[in-house]
Amino acid sequence: MTDLSVRKKLATYKPTQKVRIVTAASLFDGHDASINIMRRILQSMGAEVIHLGHNRSVEEIVTAALHEDAQGIAISSYQGGHVEFFKYMMDLLRQRGGEGIKVFGGGG
Image (cartoon, rainbow, N blue to C red; front, side, top):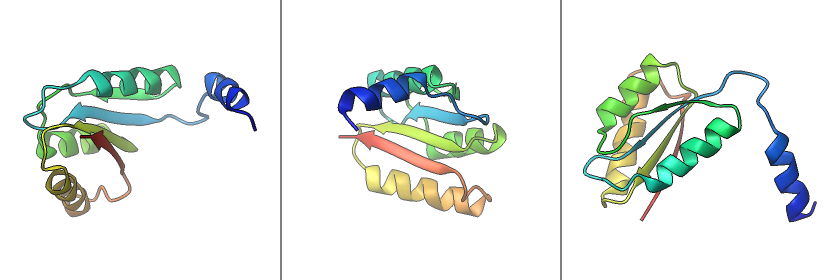
């Protein structure tokens, strides 16, 4: 498959079931340009996005994901401490019965 054919398929893709994703930038992080781009891409593909904005704690993100019955969480983290932040998020999801929620992250 060529790169162009992949792009064409993605451009016309629409999910067959409702997809809900919580997006946010991590605590102490005001850099939200990348997560805003990801949010727009997800929305253009048909996902319902619950965007929490920047400077969000693990507690806020996990609570929102569980409350909104989200299938996924997408986080941008440019503040350092990524390993600890994501480990705590996974632990908290497990503790609260959200182990089926997929977590996606990026940053530097």
